[in-house]
Image (cartoon, rainbow, N blue to C red):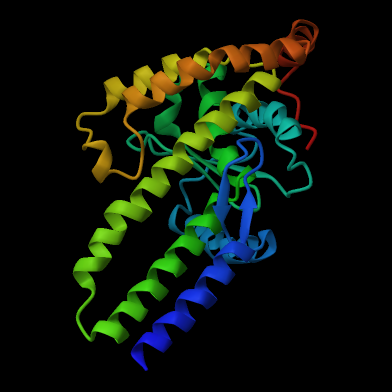
Length: 275
């Protein structure tokens, strides 16, 4: 009876897994994901409300020069992301101690003021923002939820079959399945973001300097196999390997003329973005 149960579960699970395989945009990676973009956006609404509530009083106004600075960068990146139809909103959180930025699915952008110093210039900020937008392009949030669902179901089945506590197996699954998957997503967002910033006529070599500054600012970095992110050294090495492709994309985008157009726009009195 137990063997039959396991056989049915394995067959049904395998069929479900294969049916929900899809290809990630830009990178071409095959992955399991059964959450639709609509489901992802719906679940993100709660996260959006929670974040806004948590930082109420620290969010700079939409007219603040720093907010408008971030919006200018977004104005160049959004048109090449393929996500122009989203209702994009930019929020800058005044907290110089936090060096972070993130995009909640649905186009909600949050940037902590503490990361701007490490960005250094517009190219550095474009590196950060294109990476965060790339997570939305690749629907990494829904992929993560799908993998977590698989993990929970797998552990539940093991618990029923073996009748034992699966907490240890849960830790193992986290180490050998979930964390490597997260690192893969981060590297993928680096790649997609690099191509995106190049197409938007930002110098992709600026990404190397950004991650070098990130490495210097980091007081401690845990071993990669324990982390959800690649090490800064590995990120820098990957970006250097991708640079020829990114520079070719920048050349194909006829950026010489477009960069001049952006420079003229920059000289205007902080004009509003057109998205």
